[in-house]
Amino acid sequence: ILLEAHRLQVTAYTQFLPSPRKYRRCVLQLQADATYKLTEFPLETYADDLATWQAAVRMWYWQNDRGLLWRPKAGDESIYV
Image (cartoon, rainbow, N blue to C red; front, side, top):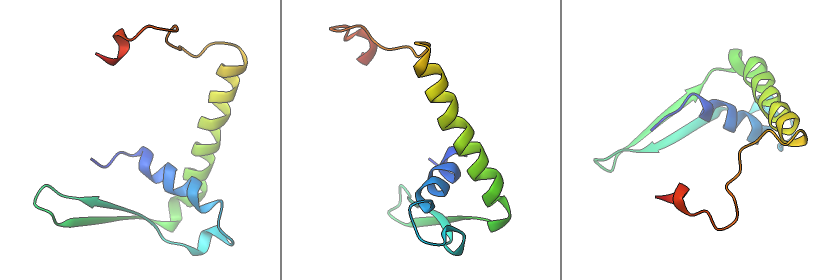
């Protein structure tokens, strides 16, 4: 499964590399027939993808700081069914 969010994830990974824009952002998927599919994300979307990732992280912290994130109660295992 390839999700649009994967492009954001690999963009975030590049931030830990020197000169992050010089790296190609790719996702490698193993197919059901044991072949691979490589998807590359264009450099032209890098700035927007990075800004979107940073906004998502900031939103998580904003919600977390205000206690707005849903969390299971201790011992509540019904969410795993």
